[in-house]
Amino acid sequence: MLKKEFRLNRKELDHFFKKRSRFLRGKYVIMRFCSAETKEKKFAFIASVSKKRGGAVLRNKLRRQMSEIVRGKIGDIKSGMKIVFFMKIEKSPPPSFKDLKNDILNLLNVIY
Image (cartoon, rainbow, N blue to C red; front, side, top):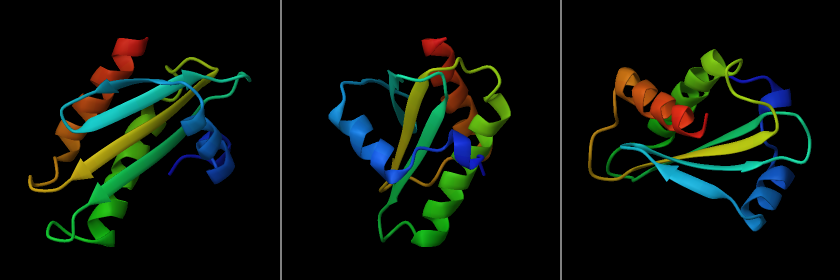
């Protein structure tokens, strides 16, 4: 899990969605990002899973996996960015960790 200093809290997340931001779409993940007023890096991870695919266990597993991928690359991400990762699983099976990692790293490489 990311340290608290790198996570967007609920108030910051509300402000993020009211602000103009850009987005990129990968195979499994959608990434919204904008520049921050401060020099800190902040992240949020949102996973949505249909009831037919699984419940809280799968949703939390996907959020932990996304968080772990970003935690490994946090030094390479430039300061002053707020990034939110979205994942929605409805009909397809959830991606493997390797596929998810490739997708997120490709999205991060596009903005850097």
